[in-house]
Structures are given as C-alpha cells and as structure tokens.
Amino acid sequence: MINWDPAPERPLWLQLMETLRQRIVSGTYAPRTKIPSLKQITQEFEVGLNTARHAIDDLEAQGYVRPVPSLGTFVAPAEEWPRG
Amino acid sequence: MINWDPAPERPLWLQLMETLRQRIVSGTYAPRTKIPSLKQITQEFEVGLNTARHAIDDLEAQGYVRPVPSLGTFVAPAEEWPRG
DNA sequence: GAGAATTTGTACGTATGTATG
DNA sequence: ACATACATACGTACAAATTCT
Image (cartoon, rainbow over all chains, first blue to last red; front, side, top):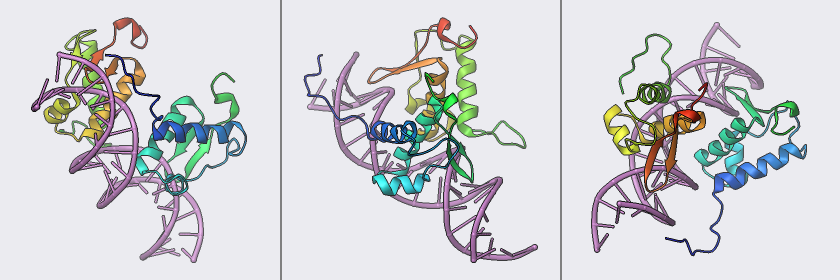
C-alpha cells in the first residue's frame, strides 16, 4: 500500500543529530573539545535522555565524536570524519 | 538473561548480541529468514526491550541482520557479513 | 582522605505511531 | 477488526570513573 501521507517529520533524534553535526563541521564545536553533556543537550533541545543518546550514538558511529565515560563527549579530529 | 561471564561482567546486550550472532553464523538462523521478534527475544533471554534492541542494533550495524518495520528482522545474506 | 557532583554506560519500564498479515 | 512487529520517544534508576569541594 502506498503511503499517501505528506512528508512526515523526521525523527527527533535525527534532527538533533544533524544539528549537532552541523555545529561540528562548522567549528562551533571544535575538534578535540568537549561538546555539551547529555543532560545539557536534553535541556537545550528539550528532548529526552534516550533521544539525545540516540543522536550521540549515531554521531559516534559516523566518527564525529568520541564519548569518554566520566569525562564527556569530545569532537573527533577532522581526519576521522566521513569523506574527509 | 543468565550472566555467563565471570569477573569482568560484560554488558547483557553484548552477551546477547554474541549469542544471536553465533546462531546466525552457525546456521541456526539461516540467511533471509526471520529471527525471533524483539518480544520473543526478551522472553527467551529474560532481558528488557531496550537491551534486546541494543543487541539487534549492533547486529544490524555489523551487517548480520536487517530489521524491516511491521515484518520482522531478517538474517542478511552471508555476503554481507563481516570478513566474508 | 572524605564526600558530593558530574558524566557516560547499562538496564528496565511504558506509551504511541505506522505498516503488515 | 484485530494482532503482530519495528520505530520513536519519554521516564527512571543504578554503576563506575572522574572532578571538585
């Protein structure tokens, strides 16, 4: 059955991932620096913890960030980013 | 789920992922067939839904399975598996 | 050294949406 | 009409390691 619905909204976690990724590639979050904590992300973007975590997990899988337990999540060197 | 590991308790989701992966590579779950649903997995292994999902997400990232909404999760063709 | 706060990781709970059979 | 099944989304709690007071 064809889905006749108009374009559904992209998932929250995907929108959040793209926003954070944009801040990385634009330099707002510089390589080797710490990005906001999961808690801060939930507060700034008003999303749940799992949603924020989903976005970060995806960014990690893409090679943009590297979470370090107890310390924070850091922007990976640009050499580790995709197609770079 | 029973923790089969001694001292350095590995995460439940990781143990579950390895168990399911073993069933795939051993042929218990054959390529292009459907593996048990998330709900069935939670019941057989006595884990939470998120834990089962984490294991499946990892298997998907590795290329062993492909979840299809509304239908189920299917074993990928062996050609798509790692190092093969 | 003790204790509190922070931060990621793990784990479970619950509800809703959407598509399929 | 109903059950199944994956996806999304919020909530809660505890563990381990680090940092700060």
